[in-house]
Length: 263
Image 1: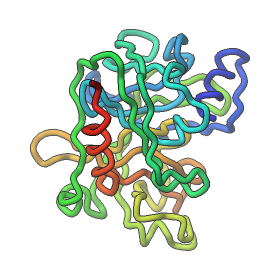
Image 2: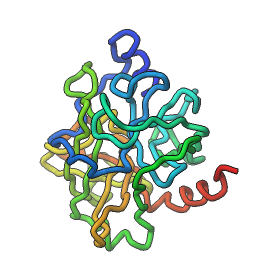
Image 3: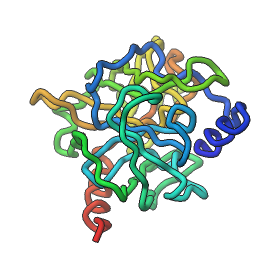
Image 4: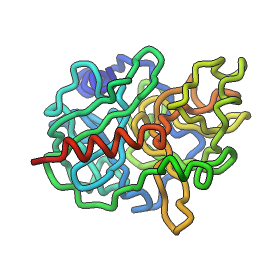
């Protein structure tokens, strides 16, 4: 549906989805700070028009994104990946998608297992992002640590997307707190990760879907902790951003990349 919305907007100037502003409370990202960040866009349209989701480069042939970005009738030939730029309107390199792999556990009603891999037919020449391994959760992404989410965002409801990559800091929150009655009242599963602030004000939102939530790896770089998935409203009090927790699906990611590698 998100891809269909982007196509409809490019053709008619009207949105099918009610999209809120994205990367709330953020600022333009430094040039080259997140080289693994990609834009998913409708094929054969400029990324500045056809962008519908984000993603992260894992290696020269694989991009990680959210399942809800590419489920339904999405065909690989209908998606193009742009990387290597902070500006959708200029620079960067476009790559074609060869095949889409969606987690078998994906549930479009609950957004559980909201994760997908794109195998790229071209070779992506940029710095990839490492996954947070299950054994590193307590060290790299404990409750209270500051993480960073990035993406290209709408500037107002019904508008076009921002040309400039944005980023914002959000605080990792426990699933227990996120499942409180005032937050998501039990909707958060073990495959989900919440981040934001109880007071609101800084968040990712609809359309940043599939993009990266990263944490410091304590070695001078970053590791991928989450994938933008869903939330209620944008940057509202008690309504944290919800991400697919990368460590909980890391085995599926690595096994799929290994077993489905290009021949």
